[in-house]
Amino acid sequence: MNSRKQKLSSKNAAAASQLQQGLKAAMSKHQQGQIQAAADHYRVLLQFAPDMPDALHYLGVAEHQLGHPQEAVRMIRRAVELVPAYVDAHNNLGNVYKELGQFEAAEASYRAALDLRPEFVMAHSNLGVVLAKLKRHEEARASYQKAIDLKPDFADAWHNLGNMLSKCGRLEEALTAFRRAIELAPYTPSAYEDLGNALAASQRANEALAVYRQWQAIEPDNPVIEHLIAACGGEARHTRASDGYVQDVFDRFSESFDTVLAGLGYRAPAYAGELIAELLGQPRAELQVLDAGCGTGLCAPYLKPYARHLLGMDLSQGMLDKAAQRQAYDHLEQAELSAYLAEHPAAFDLIVSTDTLIYFGVLQQVLEAAAAALRPSGHLVFTLEAGEDDCEPGYRLQLHGRYSHSESYVRRMLEDAGLSIKATRRVTLRTESHQPVVGLLFAAQRVA
Image (cartoon, rainbow, N blue to C red; front, side, top):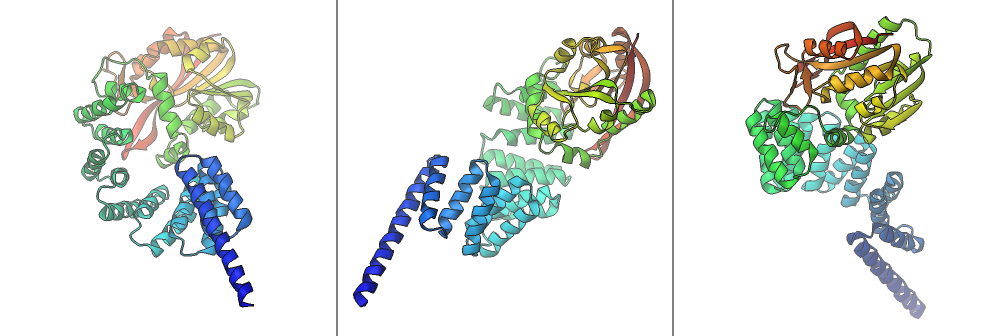
């Protein structure tokens, strides 16, 4: 009997040793970046030991990296059910929830990790990220600060702290945090961008320009930097934002666009919708309508009732992907605005463009193209940011990277394009840095 027990014990020990060797081999593949191969190896291990916590955890991490977050949640949750004190698994489960936008669940996972290991630096930093997403800014700031207290050379935490201090209106502290992040990680482009943008937002153009030039030394071909340098007056006047700038900015902005704009009290689509109702009366769903620079589709609810066919076009594929989720458009197309309009002569009864022409300084070409794309008696409705009437030559590239235009210049360009002005209004488009952004709302009609 004892001999049988000893043989069984030896066999179990050998099996356990083989499993551990297999786990090490899978982890080695994982660390070398062979994610799919590692995931396949973890699955083989789980066929022999379905309740092996490490294999479940690391398979979940791999599934997350492979773009399968729901499967990642299932695996990592099983690991923490088996081992409730599994600190790293709680943290990684929080990471998956964060990606899924389940911020309350992510917070709970990070707090579980911190209950088990109060000095877990990454968990404090990750908690700060989700608290920021939940708009609990002071709590987020405290989490980043705790991470820094534990690890003073943690560049990402300094960077995130800078963003949070900026949101809380503590500009000088934010600038200090951004600069510290750059000292610790001097080849991090986003830190230069955020520092420069914070300086630009406070009208410190020369300091912002110096930071943008440092950033340009790291990324000399980045179109965003070129545009921001121009906005600070460091280059010859640009007549419009480059396609590369617009694509880069809005592809990155697409995920948070609707939430951020809602927080700023964004009203341009609603203003455009109200004016369209005044111009066209009762909607009959019989018009060919173009949402020019449609973004995530915020104008679609105001345009769809008038449209027999509603088209949306934008330069940013990220924005178009979000617009497609609304299922309001009959067709979406990635294109540059002036070129798209020029390729569709007399195609539309109504063209609407909110917060798109603010990336054009010179309006002549795009308004002429819009006029040509309208059918006889068709309408163009658009917004701009209001500039001073004495600005020459009628537009100005502002520090934030958008153009403002004088009303007299816009009127002249519309008339030169053969469009009859039907309405002009000064409106508050949104609030930015606690200040109203004053805009111009225009409606014009193609002369029949």
